[in-house]
Length: 170
Image 1 (tube, rainbow, N blue to C red):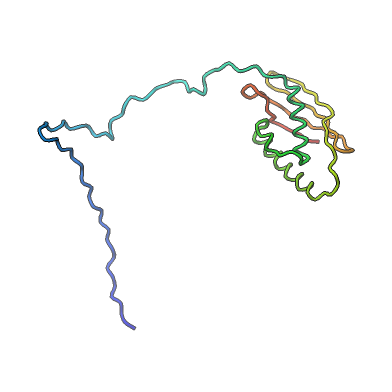
Image 2: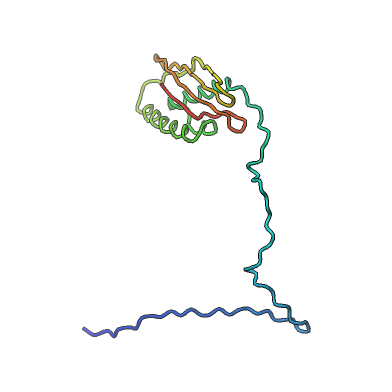
């Protein structure tokens, strides 16, 4: 076995940066020294109102009844696993969409294991009440095969359209 001499520790020394100095063109005077551009601030645009906060005329809300009926049918089809849940993303809040997505996944798995013909799920009745401006409460009666079920939804106005922000399935 041979002895290996100990190596001295490696020292890294940074190379100093050379400052670039402008040189004048032949026959021209030397330019005046400019201020360091890192410390020059140009005028900034100043606005005291953010563009997103400016008041705008809201478009008139459509009647919630026909929309509630079509959304109710879509909700029933999603919960039965017959319609992709992504089709409801623009009509629901993120919390409602997440709950629908979870229930839809379970319904789809249940439907894959079932060899029977799926029963037709239909919306029997939709009742809409507006307790205040921009809020619509929807009661939905659903026929699912031989069962009659109830659903309740709360819709709110959002930029001139209705979205479902609460859903209860019975």
